[in-house]
Amino acid sequence: MLQHKYAARYFDEIIGNDVVVDSLVERLNRYEDKPHTFLITGREGCGKTNIAELIRKHVKCDDIDYREINASSDRGIGNIRDIAESLRYHPHGESRVIFFDECHGLTSDAQEALLQIMDKPNERNYFIFATTDPQQLKPTFKRRCSAIELGLVDDELLKEYLMEICDEEKVKVHDAVLSRITEMSNGSTGVALGLLDTVYKISDSKEALSLLQKTLDDDSFNMICKWLINPSSGSYVGLCSLLKKLKGDPVAIRNRIMFYMQKVILNKCDAGALHVMLSIPPVKDISIMPDLTSALIGSYVDRG
Image (tube, rainbow, N blue to C red; front, side, top):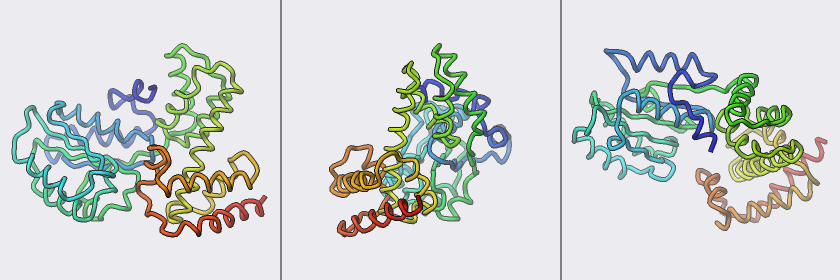
């Protein structure tokens, strides 16, 4: 996959976040007052995991001393107790790194337990947390971490980056396709590389653009369904924007949303769809779905 192949190997290879990266490198190079707890925030695909890996390399943490935890599933206090027990022993190499991905999934008790651990720092232990939703974390938890806030990459810079990768891969991708990928990525290098990976071997630009549209439709349906189950997950204006990007008859769109929602609610969809819904409270009364969906699509039609 292009996203893995072209992941930054050094801090100076990260694009679009120069000030943030320079600040991080300065903190890591301190002889005194070096932070040992980091909180990386930013939207999906902005490079949080890549940054965590670069921190691990910088502090010379070997594989045997590295532990990665997906907090969306391993989120309870029992897991934190296991970590606390492991910290009683010295790392095999120079340092130990524990990386919590999706850390907004940690329970309140788990966050409190981690705070107690972090309040007793060890020069050889490092904690890295990554999240797309820092608002779910306790204020005291966020204050305890050294913040790394990754922003969006400028469209022009992102498109140039994609062109460089195409040159490296020795493939020619039509300018319209690269422009469309850039537009769909909304400043996310990871999303851009994922989309490029889907179409860069397709020589017919119309076919590539058609495939990108289908990808956009699928992603939009995920977000629409997420909003229907939990309206606080996004804005109404953003939802209408998603609807306008969809191609097809409004009634067909409504039916497709209903079909997708039934699969998710009944746990009959694929693993990818379920993953999208993991952080969303379940709907107890699915009879309200037709009314919600009809109102949503009706509003979309009324607005032209």
